[in-house]
Amino acid sequence: MSESKGYIRSADEKGSISISEDVIAIIAASAAMEVAGVNGFFFEHGKEITHKISKKGFAKGVKLLIDGDVVTIDVHIIAEMGYSVSEVGVAIQKAVVSAVEDAVGAKVDAVNVHVRGVALRKQRTRE
Image 1 (tube, rainbow, N blue to C red):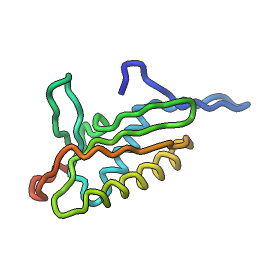
Image 2: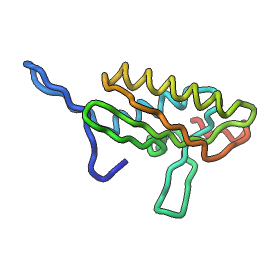
Image 3: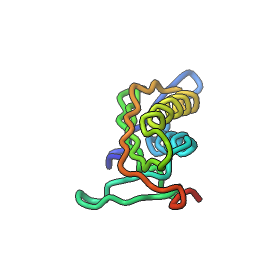
């Protein structure tokens, strides 16, 4: 996520609501993690090192672009052997769109799934 945090904002006669991109990223990551065939997430540390992360810091594997009340989401995952990678990707897209739109009320323009690696089931990182 960028250094300048984005927000989804709405206002009415009773006041305003601001939802941080960190909250949206956690919602998206939680939905993606529930999909069968997802072993964990990846994130970039600096420019040259990629780390595998578990549920503890999984929102770091999700990047957002917020434009008003429209969100574009990039999810960087490690797939699990034994699953169709393309089917896992489609399932992630559906789960993330549903979770974010239901919880936040924002329109999800796109969910881009980046499969950054494959892991054996016995190496599962879920906690």
